[in-house]
Amino acid sequence: MNLVKNFDAAPLDLTKVFDSVQSLHLAHSQKEKLVVILGATSTGKSSLALELAEKFGTEIISADSMAVYKNFNVGTAKPTQAQLERVPHHLINILEAEEKFSVGEFVRRARPIITRLNQLGKIPIVAGGTGLYIQALVEGYELSAGKSLISHYKQTGELLYTAKIYGLTTERAELYNRINQRTKKMFADGLIDEVKALLASGISPKAQAMRGIGYKEAVEYLQGGATLDETISKVAQATRNFAKRQLTWYRRMNYITWLEI
Image (cartoon, rainbow, N blue to C red; front, side):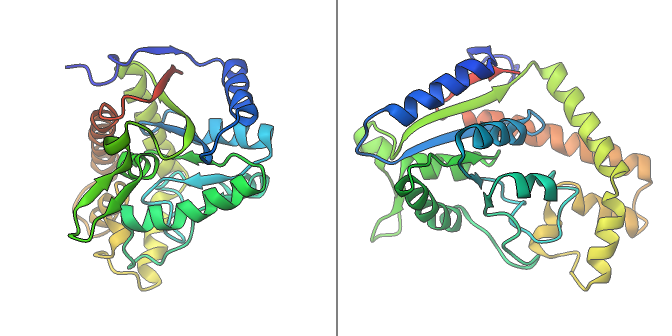
């Protein structure tokens, strides 16, 4: 089954997206407002989020389970320092490599940021590819007294926020080409040197952050377990597999408006 094509997607039109977000600004709502940009890896989520944040003078909340780690930059495709200076970002560079991060922690940290920005008259932009984090946030997951998850969305049929939720998609061949090119760029940009420096700083190869795609393969390469070409190929394959899992997850979220990049 083609896990990429089957979304009912309209061509990405920035003017229409801007107009839609502007209408959200003007809409009367008793609920807090939110814009979400999601999609598989390598679809340009960060770029669109930056454009929207600059256009509307707001801030970005990262929904990326790896971007939370300090000094893990190249392999996470984290926003550059220049981009971080252009627009305030949240939930980036907040944890050490050994620390664990979970969906519950993401929601706990993201909600007060959303509230504060709404109180300032700004609509926050959540951008990232970790579908579970985004789903739990917008559907209003809570732990019951018995420690089971309760979904506000499943109980009421309504999302927790008045939201515009956009998903970026493309055909499988184009997505895979983007992933392959991004993987090559990561290595050209110094992924091996970054991992070497992280290990030299005392970070364990078994640290939580070192389990991310690109990092565990780079560790294997540095330990002599694979050639550089084999390592690049492994990272590209692992990333393609990850993209498939992302797209499978998004199918649970039938409120996404899909845009063809």
